[in-house]
Length: 206
Image 1 (spheres, rainbow, N blue to C red):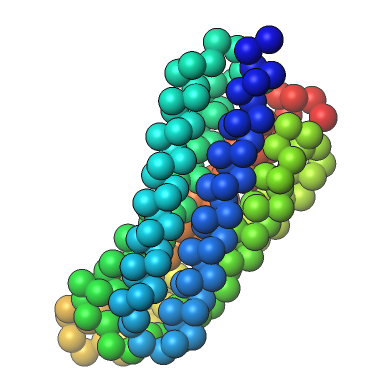
Image 2: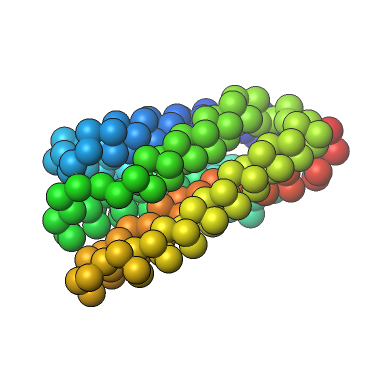
């Protein structure tokens, strides 16, 4: 059957894609640990995002050639889209650091980066065996990522309150509000991927 030759290709694409997000999360942690903006970090994350875009293109090309797939085609499209959003928002946030000419990072940045790293690593582990995911396993993943995403939400609210009272310059406030929102968006899409995996495992009935 056709899906037997193409399904392993999808699994490989998903694994390669989430591995790029794990690398980007590592670059993000290193960037914020540096304490100031480094152009090389932006270049590296942009490079990773470009590789991810190529995987998205490849996924759609393989899908176009596939008559039967083990996973529902809409699930494949949704999964690769949400995986790509993780890197898209990561790159978008780092570009904002450059655009706003951020000279020094606020302490919340490192906490956000740690959360992103934990979430991408958890997704990476789950995607290693996509076609044998058990529902119990994905439910545990959803709970873990939901907790981390809620932590990110609370961090965002606390950070916004803090900058509202501490930033004397309107432009500085707008810049940090945007940066923090982009970081929180990354965690939102990590949680979305976990929910998709949970949905897939329910359909597969394992």
